[in-house]
Figure (cartoon, one colour):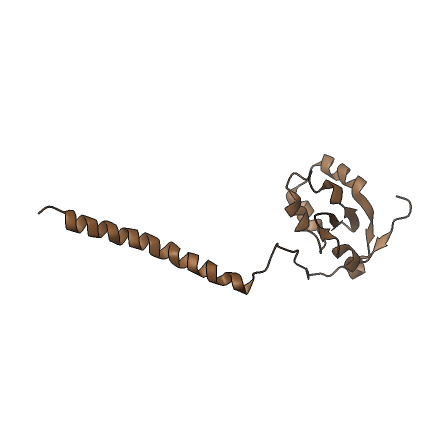
Length: 134
């Protein structure tokens, strides 16, 4: 790539959907949209690395040399490293955070997980006590 286009972090982070996914790895910008269905880890892995510098995510997995070679066909430019935040400011849709409205069902499930076994134990003890022959 003789002349590489330079992207701002904000521009790259807008591409965070299955049908439009860009990643920043080692200062380069990759358009991996066409690779989403073929990625061995699934598209969720790629989506979880959008909106940040995904270099650590990529390196932690220990990709093969073949994977590194394959990446070259997805390079579309470089990122202006001065625009990349040191901390992740963006959480991809559906991948983090909780909705306060969802807390009630979760609380109810936890209560039931505690009460149902206790109820079964109490029922077993009652049956044993009343059916025990003296």
